[in-house]
Amino acid sequence: GVNEAAGDTEAKEALLEKDRKYLWHHISPHNENPMIIVSGEGSWITDIEGNRYLDGMSGLWCVNVGHGRTEIADAAAEQMKTIAYSTLIQSHVPAIELAAKLNEWLEGEYRIFFSNSGSDANEVAFKIGRQYHHQRGKASKHKYISRHRAYHGNSMGALSATGQAQRKLKYEPLGAGFTHVPPPYCYRCPFGQKRGACETQCAQAYEDAIIWEGPDSVAGIIVEPVITGGGMIVPPDDYLSKLRQICDKHDVLLIVDEVICGFGRSGQRFGHLNFGVRPDMVTMAKGLTSAYSPLSATAVSAEMYDSFKESGPDSHFRHVNTFGGNPVSCAVALKNIEILERENLVSRSAFIGKELLNRMKPLQSHPHVGEIRIFGSAIGIEMVEDKQTKEPASAARVTAILAGCKQRGLLIGKNGDTVPGFMNILTLSPPLSTTDDEIVFIADTLL
Ligand code: PLP
Image (cartoon, rainbow, N blue to C red; front, side, top):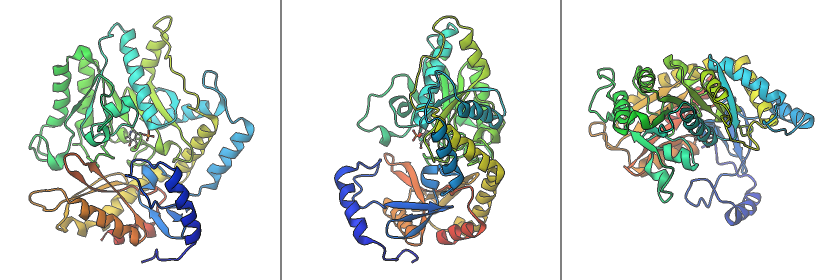
C-alpha cells in the first residue's frame, strides 16, 4: 500500500499519550488510536506519520473547496487585523455582505440569522417557527415533524428532530413536540412500493401525520433534500414539491436543512433548487465556510420576517448568540463562496458524482452491493449480505471495506442507524475541487 511510510513514530507516541489522557473524542467509542492529522492540500490530508489519504468525505461532508486554501487564511487574517469581533445586535460589513450573497445563492428573498453550527441553525428555525405562529394568533402550533433516519444535530431540539434511535439512547427525554414519519426510502420502501411506480405514499404519510397530530398543533416540518447522514436516502422526484403543497394546505412551515446538501454538494447551489421548491426557512452550515471557520445560518422568508416586524412590542426574535456571525467567519464564508463561484465548483460537483457513478458501474453487479445512490457528489453505497433478501451487510464486512480503502489511501464513511441493525451504507462526498485523476483513484480503489 501507499501508506507504509515510516514517519515520526516517536512524536506520534508522545502525542497519543496526551490524547489518551486529556482528549474526549467525538462520537467514536473511546478511540485509543486516532489518526492525528497534521496538514492538508486539495483533496488530500496527511497524518503525523506522513501517510497521505484522499479525504473522500471532505472531513464530515464539509470541506467543499478542499484543503489548504491560503486565500481563505489570508481573508481570515485580514479580518482579524481589521476587527475580529462585533455583535450582531449592531452590524458589521462581512455579515451584511454575506447575507446579501446568500440571498443571491438562495434565489429568493430571505433574512439571514447567523449562528455557529448546523444544530444551532436548526434550533433557531424551531424557535422562529413557534414564535411566528404565536404572533399570528396560532399559539397552539408548536410541533415539528421530521423523518426517521434523519439527522438534524446534537442539541436537545435538533436531536429531538433527529430520527435515529441510537443517537438518542440515554439522552431522553428530549424536547417535547417532535414526531417522526417514515423516510422516503425507496430501496426498502416502508409502503411496499417500487421507485418510479408509486404514488409517493411517503409524502402522504406526512399529511396523515399532520392530520393525526392535529393541524392546529403543528408548526412545521423539517427535511433534508436528501437524507445524507442517515443513509443517503434519495426521495422520489416529486416528494419535496408534494411536501410544499401539504405544508401550504395546513399552514405548516417547510424547513429545509441544507447543512450538508448546500453549497454545491447537490450539484446545484442548494439541494432544494433541484426540486423547484421554495422553503419557508433554510438552514445551512458546513460548506458555508468549507469548515475553515465555524458558522451557520438560518434563512427566513421575507414574509415571515415582515410578520415579526408587524407584530408589535416584544415581537422581535429574542435570541442572541455571542459568536454567531463572527466577522472572521463571515469573511471566510465570503472568500469560500468566491472560490466556489470562480472555479465553477457547483457544476464540478455534479460532474464528479456522475463520473464516479459511471466508473463504479461494475460495482452494481457485486454480490454485496444492494444499491448505489447519488445526489450531486454525495454518494451512498448500500451494502447487503444478500441481494435478494437485502439483509444489511454485517458490521465486520463494512469495517473491512473501510480499512481496506484506508490501507490504499482513501478515506470513506459509513452510516445508517445501528438500532435496527443498519450501519451498512458506505458514503463518499469528496471535495468539489477533486481532480479527474483523483476521481479515477477513488473509483479504482473502491473497485
Ligand atoms: N443537519 C444535518 C443534515 C447534518 O448533517 C448535521 C451534521 O452533520 C447537522 C444538522 C448538525 O450540524 P453541526 O454538527 O454543525 O451542529
